[in-house]
Length: 378
Image 1 (cartoon, rainbow, N blue to C red):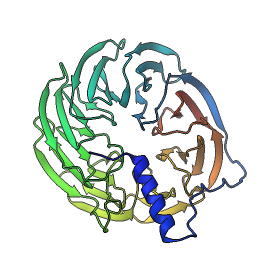
Image 2: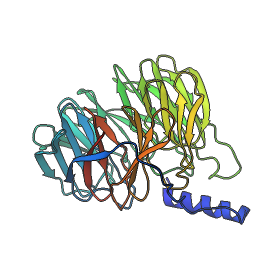
Image 3: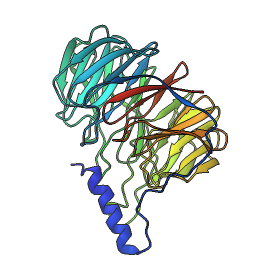
Image 4: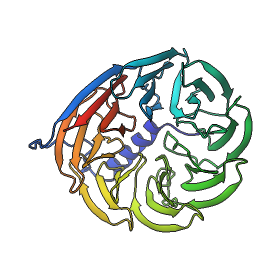
């Protein structure tokens, strides 16, 4: 059984403080700078309850001109991505923890009880629900025929997209202590790619769940269970024939998508989603440094270490910039070439947990309190 992330972080702090009196555990104060660009709010929408205190992982999903979002108390909405105009809304009246996944016909969400919900993209009407073995903290994914769902107990399920019936199941053993979270599975062609708390990335056949390859991204090291945590909670990033996988207390690795062989690996500790644009990979490290790495060889291009201990979210590259959020709800805009600050804006006083998404020049930020905001960098 997974122990919660709060316990893990508390253990890390206690361990650090017991080893030295000089450890600084306070968030770094934000540095002043002269803004070079403006972060302009285009529209905002109150989705409902937003995230909850159990570390729900509800992230909006963009498909064409339509944006889908969900709140932890069961609110689901469909919006025009450019204007924020509501197309439809649905109240499931159930606690949601993972989503939103978008398939050709349906949306998919997961709950703390292990239930998967399929809703029509057209009007939000419920198509089916299926009960699985454990909490669902990631977004189910589908190609219209198979729905792939990862649960907190280390299992990956393939479900029939028409009725939710189980087609296959893949098990990956869960360590004694892990971070609270799971990576979204990634579907491409006839395969699904996933990362697990064991520090392993796998490729499976989408039709039957048969393993194609397995690659260890991180090797557990140390004497304590805390030191041996190597979760892959960052969603694998697919670019052409390369899968990029990032592990906590491990490495970031470029993997050949066809055979699972490493192309390069660089020491890195992160459990947040990674982003890529114009030859670089952007990552928020576990100690809250934002780093740009060369996507071809893993060499560091730049690092911004001015936000240490601010619980940074996943970085998101858009245009000539990299956006990243922190625990106080600020969004920081960095120059993509050198990582310097160029803009900053307060989004949500309760913080931002969801990964950001973008499309057609707009950056979408979903705050923990339930406000979804569209920004333009200009």
